Image (cartoon, rainbow, N blue to C red; front, side, top):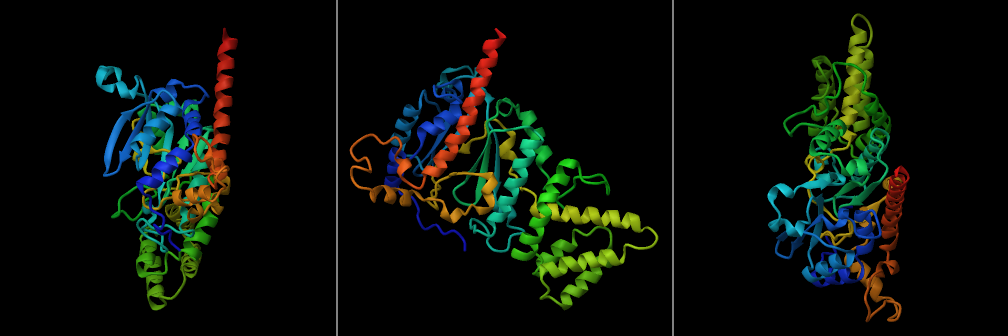
Length: 420
């Protein structure tokens, strides 16, 4: 069942959320890498989207309290986080242009469900359900492992976008310091699905029929069972004529196989995707004998691997990751259409994550209202009312992530002290 826009936000709800529930201190410490303000926070750009789509850029703040005060004053529908600049963004108009440039920025990734519209069968457009979330889950598992194992990054924060996607923030010092050119190179390395709507084959990762590169061979092992469970069984991607024609376009240089399969499937249109995939494998097996069979086999093994990767490998919005000055929605913002909070997600349990169970701002405020007057903290400043709601495990997840960053900062300072 698709997630419905059943709990949309209102300005009053948002103001109460910012005053009582938004974890400003946790977000501040995450950005600053210390309990006290550092340039990672004070020189950081914040952009606000106000009611009526008014957009305010180049805001910056000296502390978490200052950020909270401004957010509660503006009451934005959402706010975004940008890079750390060479000067404070709020001073942009008084600084020489040459002295104002992005210096540091988390390496960020964005995976959006709409990029899977050409293959998912349960939903389309802005809709998402528990079934098609499995595309995102597979992408998270593959990308998380690749970035940890191949690049050595440790501090990865995955955040649900509030509706149909997921964002990744990498806060390792090495990631923060990447230039735009280095970001483009890294994104090029992890991008496999390329090409527009008119291009049938979107995976071109090898020379001829050579084996997959080791990094992709590892991803393929993870994705092969996903292909069978998600693409063949759950989504039944090759059930329709459009679906099976898309598959036939990916079978290379063998019109005999394509002709044979097309005739079979047109005469038996009710065959399941699993049956059709088995038909393809049977056709390949029956032709894998005699003269030239070794070349034929290697061609078909490569084609099969490329098909599985095309249907299951992460579909990344590369432009989001390539530039330091790109803005990305802050964790714990609220999606205006669904009312759901953009909460952190544990990649180890991503398969069990259900977007429909993520708390909405209205639900969280109802939870607070249901508490006894003394318990819900009425009448005073509200800094951590989230502790009394179903938002708590998600803020705890961010705080646990922040502990790793604080420890890294402590070790770095210790190393500098010892070098003296």
